[in-house]
Length: 465
Ligand code: LLP
Image (cartoon, rainbow, N blue to C red; front, side, top):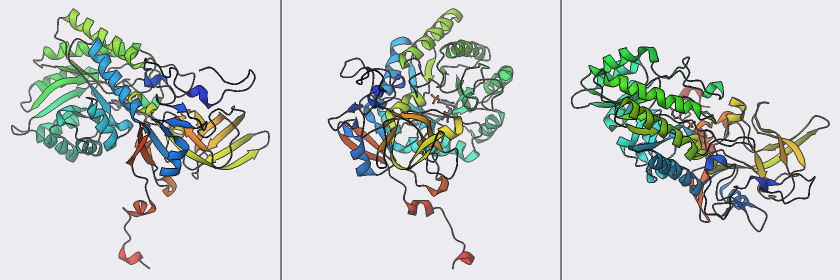
């Protein structure tokens, strides 16, 4: 994006607008910082989905998650179309709903033809309530409870079995009238460069069967009458920019598939997990959705041709790259503090309770001032949250225009693992979320009220005044 300011003056918020605007070619959402429909309107305000962002805040309150329907649908479509283009067999994209599980987002993914990956009874309940067909729901998790497994079985969803304990529990629950469709999660022993908390494919991981136990697991499963083992699954981590780890994974998984056939197992589904990274800052350069999908398809097709095995149904389960860029969080700027020669702070009306990623993973975000989009970024300020914790910093050393209280600060790419990891720390109610499209905004998550905060509280009789 070309700066509209003279040389020597810093860029403005406009530099974050999607690279290709008013153009037929749709970029890959995960390579943008702002949603695809973002623009600057005649008031010099940020607009998303045809809605003026400061006006949305006025109408729906602050902080506010704003989800751009067009961007979310574009990401779903790009995944679906890329698999259809590059894979000669059947494919199914699943939305990893841990990134943001709520009715509206599950319903959009479902409308776009995606299935849903769930990791808890709560996410399963949400996907079912959103109208997703059970055959397109895949239930993950390294310690599913018996109750969760029973719910999964009676709902007739697919279960991705993580370990021996789960396998043995399933054997006890399954019956002729309740056969269970399972996939096996295996640890591929593949290293990738990402934060240690979000790596999962290395051998020292809490997830999945150890690959050394492959023979034992296949032998056990092949003897079970009511467990119908149809697939293998692996997930190597999240926010990954390299493409080689997923190529390696695809090759390893075809080996598992051929091995399984020697045990009489008819493995027809291969699930490569998710993990494609997104752009959080200008220097992040992830591959596009298409660039991620293509090599995976090629490796699987080549390996299957070489091994002379039928192409399996290919599943993938992206979360972050599907939903992150479609959403921004709008906050209102309140207090500020200048510490001469040290740091200038501005504080917003949210923080670690609506976005715990900076304090948890030291994640870096970018922001704009939605009511001053063309103002040059002349200040370096640290954006603090409102929680009683020094580490509650939304953005360290943000480059922003001169701000004042009442300005609307918009943090970009907050659709993944923000709301889903939000808390009520300090009894701060969770923000509302709105879905914007064609100049219209609809609430998809109601703002929590103080009454909501007390809803689960019980006051024993003896404590009543
Ligand atoms: N499949 C499995 C089995 C997973 O464990 C995950 C993410 C995904 C799919 C989706 O991965 P994605 O496409 O979103 O990278 N809270 C962390 C991320 C944790 C990811 C957990 N598993 C964060 O905020 O970065």
